[in-house]
Image 1: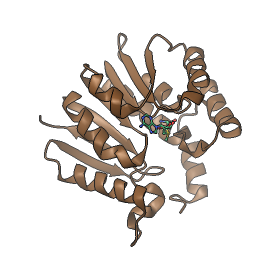
Image 2: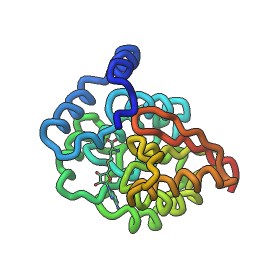
Image 3: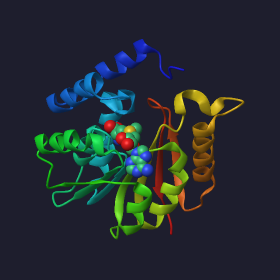
Length: 213
Ligand SMILES: C[S@@+](CC[C@H](N)C(=O)[O-])C[C@H]1O[C@@H](n2cnc3c(N)ncnc32)[C@H](O)[C@@H]1O
């Protein structure tokens, strides 16, 4: 199901700060050369991530699910001058493309890109994060939340992508991934450590703020 009328999407993009030349190039190349390009955040969501990051001015960002690096570059726009972003992806095949995108963005020293299974890497991270973006395999969304919530500062934010899952969250007979998203949304809604809003942007973005330990 298309979540947004095409003309409304086009109008929204026309009235949203344009992508940089580099982001447009990554967006275009991902669509022509990489499988499953729909996974890339894209213009509208990319600007949302960048603006949220600029409002928070984080020192430490964590991203779970790098893909070709589009969203990491957007999130890095808001980093404080000495800030760092760690991003994790399990797909080795995209590593050199993604590293080269970070280099072209001048972010190779700012972005710590680790290739491996996030479920194994997350417990080894000792940092406290001001902003986390969850955008990897849906079946582990709840696990990712559990693994990172104690590493998020009180007052820090978590964003989770695809929480409307192309509208399938309303299916009477949800499939496996949809059930995982439904469970995540229920979990967040019932967790007293956080306040949250489900933004119906693109495929749905859950914006979560940690209010207490
Ligand atoms: C939706 S894409 C990320 C898109 C990217 N954040 C963007 O907006 O451009 C999801 C990514 O999660 C990665 N992924 C899936 N399972 C993972 C896991 N267990 N650990 C780390 N990354 C994983 C996939 O390889 C894929 O590149």
